[in-house]
Length: 376
Image 1 (tube, rainbow, N blue to C red):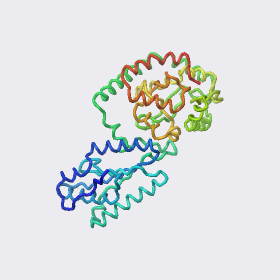
Image 2 (tube, helix red, strand yellow):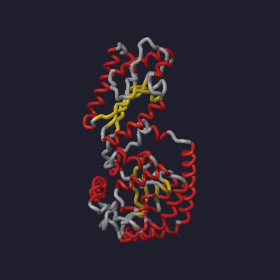
Image 3 (cartoon, rainbow, N blue to C red):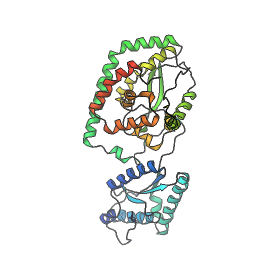
Image 4 (cartoon, helix red, strand yellow):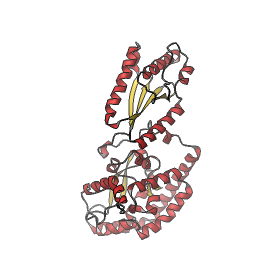
């Protein structure tokens, strides 16, 4: 790609200045394209964002020209320059970065840009610029307390919905509200009976709450009937899930797909095994559906420590659809599929979801619950 950042010092016309940069739509398409390319290549991408001061008229045009000229000093033929927000924020995409040297690259880019602004004699302008750096793949969080929602600057396509998709999402949300409220009322006797069995099976609370990662990577508190002994150590599950995500391909190559849920987990109570096998422990999630954290149909919401093990493309399952109580994975194989297969099923659902597909999955869910196929 030829360098599009060089701008004539004599040009003070804002319209011409904008024509030398990719417009907002094309630049955001480039962000999406380069982000997906990093997922295939295993390399990284840097997004340098320069916010212009709140000026007007010729002064703003001149400052935009200075910023574009300064950015041209740090660009190569592979880099992409354009408007993130018209007349407000200029962005520079630097692709194909070695992840091992990502920090040094970010520091070098910012430092070189500041030096270029100073070299042009625009030191005062440099003091009024807002400079931000974004990287992809995003840094992995170390704890659920540090969970951050999706950065919209790296996923611009997720915030631009076609009218048909927006209409479907409104219809889907309406169906979630109506059916979750109705089921919560109708299943009150079942809730009471299960609560009694849970309480009699072992000391501890009836409900179990757990932090999960929801739509656009927003954390939420998910509810279940308690199926384990109170104060059980969850480290064993964290270790198992981490192994499963990173080693499932090896298990598949040996002809024995790993199982997503632990078998013969000693932490589970006798009634808990029945609840898990029939998925009745999931019924309190109807409340999560009612308040909007979840949907009736969608991908299974992951735990924060699961997300730490995800490859960049795995994150699509929490970015492209709201998590659900049931989904394509649950009715197509449940815990007998490998992790990558589960993610592909979730992505297939997210990218082709429709009212009819939701209805088919909901109709297939009772049979999966009764047979317990794939459950552990």
